[in-house]
Length: 311
Length: 328
Image (cartoon, rainbow over all chains, first blue to last red; front, top):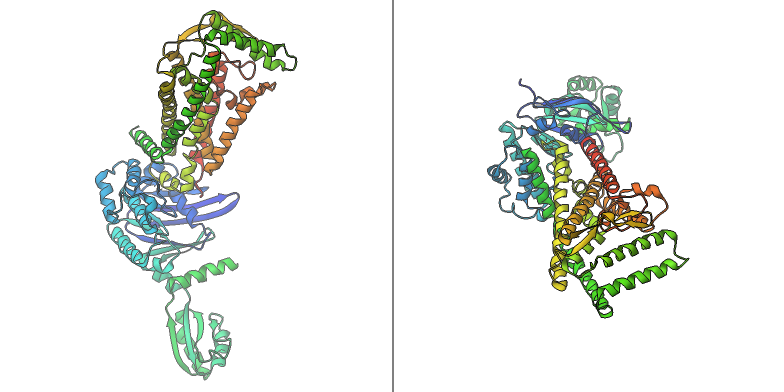
């Protein structure tokens, strides 16, 4: 594998004695779309800001295309386009003037390139209007146009679907895929997990400043304890038996007679299903149905981060 | 190098599109006619009472001497008046009218009076949001994630600010001349002005006094005003970097400037106040020989104090801007 486009090594940030980001490490390869997830206050934004030299790390380093961001930002940032939080542009200028402004700060972004990125984000009709007349979606697109000006190798998007309507989200999604197939790497932070699940090859989940999980989404989900629904002939005896196994967690079905006919929901690894079925049968409890519910990224995410916030 | 030029161009365009300079021109277009009218009224009254300007000067001297005889006037005030009497006498002896009304003369007076408060205000109107505005607008995140060193970004802002400060001084002079000239006539370029009064205690040393044509005097005065205005701009840049909110940086700078002008008019016995920047803004006052607000102040002294303040402000601004984390 080639040199990673982005390599984050043991990144730490302390602000006023509080550890905000704690030994975060990850890499992004060429053409990869990586989701960056975490609940509010997890250190997501601080990490992203350290990637683009808005915040200096307390320790650790960020390397983009071989250049150390904190040491030679003007070289490293040449390969990065980013939108940090909202796509804030100069509202008293037109979209075109904004793009000209940022093109001036780059080496090889001429008028033709400005026109090109305007076409990519389909903003040709309104590009000469003042930004203050733009809708949020249009600002988002202008922000992306700005980020693409310098033909970056890495695009960092913070909450890119914020404020977009369903059509806009769909367009953005295909647009992001298009960019990635052209070899661009993307780091996308989002709180819309279904969005990330649809878009990203890989996710990094952070909580309280630490990476708590990272990897391919389907692999992560496979590792996580899935939900298994049981429909049993004898409900109470079933619950009793299931909860006697400490590898199985009974989530629902114990409470009342209201949903007495509903299934018993458990959290358990799927490898345990055959063994459990055998034990149920041995104890004379008829098994009417066993259903393995597909875990979504969202459920997995909540399970991971909730545990930490309670602790 | 080329990049710095492009960056400065960016900043100039932004300041222009923010329409700050239009506002300044508008303020000047309102203020100057008002003062022109006031000056015109004054000239009219003078002309009625004293057909000959010499009589007016004599009357002025007599008035001042009357107040000097009074015991109720504090000694510090008397010092300034004694100096004024000697200067008026000097003008009279050399048969030079110190206030021959003309467009140039009005411009000179207006500039002299506006350097301590009005021009600093205009400068702050342009510059006090030059960095804090990027923070509140969030655009600083775009600006500082581009492959450009941070000091270059701030330097480009400083250069753009310097350009607009120069334009503001130029606009003040040009508009003053054009508007007041309409009433007082466009002449007066070569009228002599006496400069170089040396003040020692309460007496004037007129040995080094020389007459300069008014146009040269105006040029010198504009240069000195530019110098003061640049110091204010540098301090404004610093507060704009240090304080997140534009309102806070504007208000704190205006407070400092106003405090300085109050302190100077108190002719204070607190001599260390002479190291404050805002007490030293009236550089052109030294040219005409107005007694300094605090004893011991001279043109080189004030120029040095301003230079030190300006340099320190720029130093702090660059230090904080290049090292600071952008957290909001």
